[in-house]
Length: 376
Image 1 (spheres, rainbow, N blue to C red):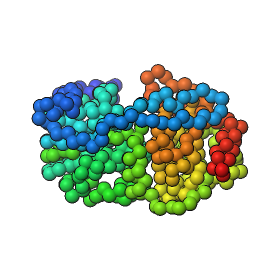
Image 2: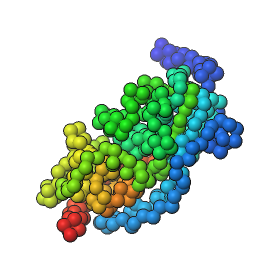
Image 3: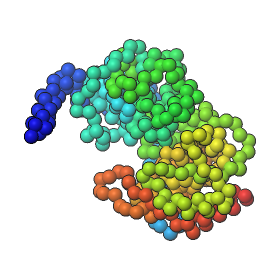
Image 4: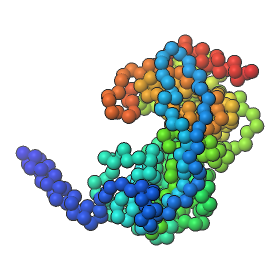
């Protein structure tokens, strides 16, 4: 009984405090577009690239399962640029940008629309004030390794391409890197780590001057120049490479019968990538064939040399074109083999939680086909 009344008391206190917090620190106050900010003198837009129509090749599909990996592809690469704002806020690892009147600049999200409005904070944290000029690289799902490389570091490439340099800024706000290796990649890309404020140490910042680059990878489709930036910045120069690489996935959406596939892979001389000890830039750049289930580890295929063969094992309940569009931007020869998911996600659930089963016979045939084309 005492516990019941204590819980009720805590809830009542929280309800009483929340309006006060919103009054002190503010709360989201609607959306604002780039055009509206420019019209009202709230921000200055510096264009980097124009919208560009995409021409993609048709991917090879192995197996009998119907799964069109191209169905979700968008036909254009978006316009990119840097928005310069004064006295602006950035909150959380997702990097949501707000004007000084708490208007949400939703066009700075990965998909550039307000569909994630319900995920915004109800009230703001007390911001950490950063004097001078601050660059924000924080981005939606930046805690994921694949999105950290393509979106957070992709924003850094947009910033550089706009004509800026690290000497032009005093601070950098960024999503916390997903591991020490990701942090090392960030430093190798030229980001001055001594200027970085990671989102886990400052849930919200308020910048005197904020430079907010757009994400270049709208709808999971990075343009070739972003892949080129990461590849040339981080990959060692390798003249030849004939290694065959399998990239496993742990957690959810893994291959349920992976043990069966490992037997087949060993037969063809594949080695397993271990993210805990292997150097992705070095190992992937030396590989001629890369195989793996849909997962963040496959983003390292951007380090592969053009012409490398990439086979994605795709869950039937999670058929997204992320690695198909990456392969196209990187000049890789892409193919996919759908596997049957062990369940079907609920309506409205964007990510499937189910493992999937790959037909060993279809898998063996897919490997044989890729090895024949590799040898020819």
